[in-house]
Image (cartoon, rainbow, N blue to C red; front, side, top):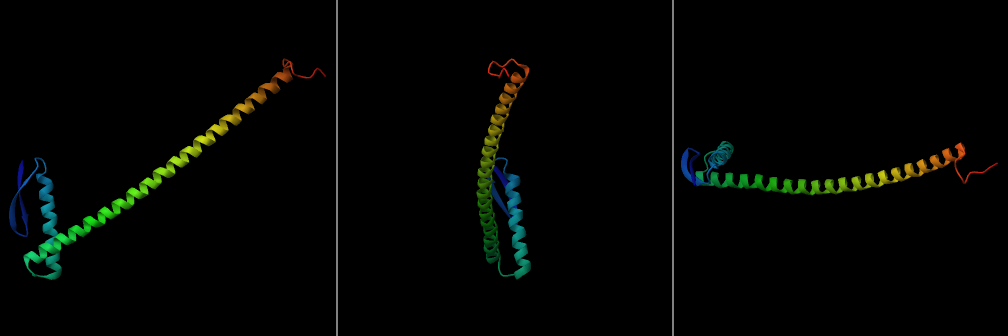
Length: 126
């Protein structure tokens, strides 16, 4: 179990975290501290507890907006994947149609070539 000192608004807090998560926890502490300082600049000295609550709500709002946007992007991605599958199916269908048409054309050309060379037993003896 890792431990890290996080400083927020000039106060240091010793916190436990999973090994390897120390840097991430320090970053989160810095982010909270920066948000508190931004609010302090906007609203002045309205009390540490009130600033901390406002910062927590601000960060929760950002998190909520990020989750909402992520949901939109996931929905959009699902739609794009479905569209890609439909395009792929249409493309495969067109490929089969073209291949069938080419095969039919090749058979007709072979038949015509055989008639012209006189080797086709079904050709007219005119």
